[in-house]
Length: 570
Ligand code: GLC
Image (tube, rainbow, N blue to C red; front, side, top):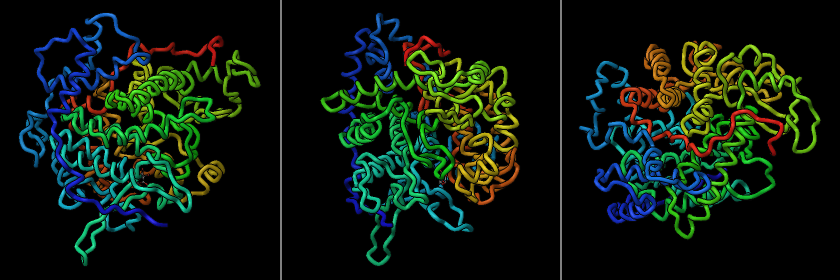
């Protein structure tokens, strides 16, 4: 199977852009929409703010606002938190004013993270997935898009945006290559799962090689890569105040290409995105095909980020309109049909089946007999979560950590739902956090079901790897969700657990067992996103204003009722 190589002109990829002209373009855009805005605010803060307000001001997604007071009150509250990247001291060493000296693991983690940096023609462009030379490399020697996200956040939080900017520009260049699997050409907007730098010692050249799924085990499609790319572009913009990168015509085009893939019209009857198995962090056959929560939550967050970043020019305007419509439909669908709590479970348990027409209560014709036994014990009286998947006669009741945390960060979950997710984590701590945070999904599938669902996958045996394994990387997502819901003590508890073992165990990729007690069967050591995830969690807990990079406030105009009812039309 061939991979695609990119031989780039080094001067082209990291050209600096005149930030001032691009910024003034944006300010004009935003200020014209907010005529009463006080003019004496700090310019940098204004520039960053404008990015969040743009999403909140759009018609449809938010109906036009009536007063200036409204405008001001709807400014992203994360902006008012005191942190400013400009205040940072040195770039090479982690900042010391937050006193991480108290956490020796932070110093170890920074050293370990820096060793994973990948350079292309002298410039840092990403971090390698794992630095473990004891195991067969497979593709762990590549820069994965999803794996780079926590690294990128750590660098941004530490005032080192350059590597993130280079990464965004490099992957954008890769997107534009022709992508083929055998004789089939992939969509133009597809972003790679991973890439690596090839050195030719004879010619003394460096080339990039990317994998869009054509080399990946099982030929899985990295649906999440494009979404993470947009989310990271917004994190970069928010953190640095540099709007010139997102404003570049090639970045605008890259976003539009990603959006074209997921907003195109087809045969769909749902606003959720239909996916093949292994399309995300769980990149093997694990029964996540259909409408997996991880993708739906990332889709929602990426749409909201794109709404902030897209210019409303001739080409962008149409996308903005389509995004607004999709966000409405998607939030309604997810908040109603993916949501499960005690009452909802009881309703499903009593469902009638074979209902025809729009008056049906059991719209997806879920057969109560298909409810797994574990769910009745697992569901606490207080608490709830977005289930793994919903489709015709299908509800996958498994808990997936990443999708639920991203749903909180994106405000796909209402504040009540976000709190309920946190309640669930607290009351099911043993199951979802155990001895080593955090379970990628719960529960594991075993025996006959494992044979059917995974195709007898020996890596995904019960309570291992993607099948109920515990992944330290998920800690940063939990921490962010905890801070957003005002419950940092939950994150603190999880971080303290991680600090007992992660560094001592040499940063494993995942842990196995019901409570995550054992280093994973085939887990890589020195796994970069385990290192970076820890750093991001600690830094966010020390300075919660970092949360603004990765979280969005709820659009209050978009709140549907929580419960479904027979009278709603579908
Ligand atoms: C595994 C994980 C995937 C990750 C990759 C590199 O395949 O399932 O999510 O991106 O390793 O770390």
